[in-house]
Image 1 (cartoon, one colour):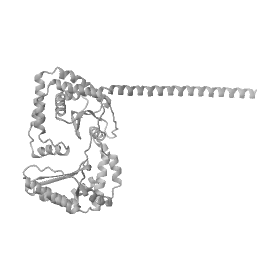
Image 2 (cartoon, helix red, strand yellow):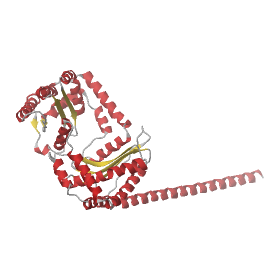
Image 3 (spheres, helix red, strand yellow):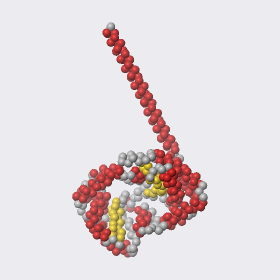
Image 4 (cartoon, helix red, strand yellow):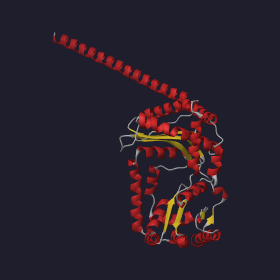
Length: 412
């Protein structure tokens, strides 16, 4: 319902926002996992006017029934069309779905959308706005007094029109990521009914985010990035899309590989595993000069100044929504990066290898044994069935012979 509400809000603001766009002001409003994300950017002297108009409209606008039906149908169509997305997009979606503590599938959203009616959506709006927790970032050509004034205007508008109160401290919960047990090995498969090729995302969970773990993971990704593409994409030609890098969500991180290919997923996984095994020797035999070049390359990339104000703002906003608030992260982590040694990277690699493989081999062996047992049982069942069929056939033949003999005696 939040998605429909915000989509209807944008639709209602089209005429007003068009004039604002001509004047150099744009806005965006979208639904997050547990939030409404509102962004206003452009010439600073009129931003507060556009922000006030958006907030007043959000708290007071009346939903048009015809537009509701049209937008609801469009949303339903987009949920149905998800099945036609690229396989690697499906792989990323399902991994995110599996690892996040609270998430809803496209099928669940589609089923819930069937029950959304205009009266229900109208009743939902005051409930949604009744209690809110607001976090804001005002960045650029603006003074502290102006920023505080805009925040006060936003709060006053919500209180006046929606009677909004702050969320209780116990309601300020944070989404968590599922912890993958050491040595575990999980496979989740979904058939793509539209595309002939397949997509795979292999995820090796490492640890919670910290300065030490962040830099070790990023440095290891920096070292394997070029060999990964050269080996899996250029030499082995596994697929057009081959990517390796860190995956971070809800304060947890790990190494991931994304491949889209015509080859089978289990074969792609085996090639990624083989590649990682070769990297241990490569890092061990790497010259100190080459290792330092990797450190310098990563440091330069991390300290590279954003080319646009929007990119710098997005970096700061990422710290807010992740609730880590480390606004000097680049300088802090690069300083730590320069202290790392090749032995640190090797220890990180072996630690991750031990976590990933201590019981995984046993699980694979158990899985293979179960498959073999199932195959043996199936063969035994088939043999038993064949034997039963043979006995039945023999009995039938004997019955026919006995009947023929009886008929001969009767004829005689």
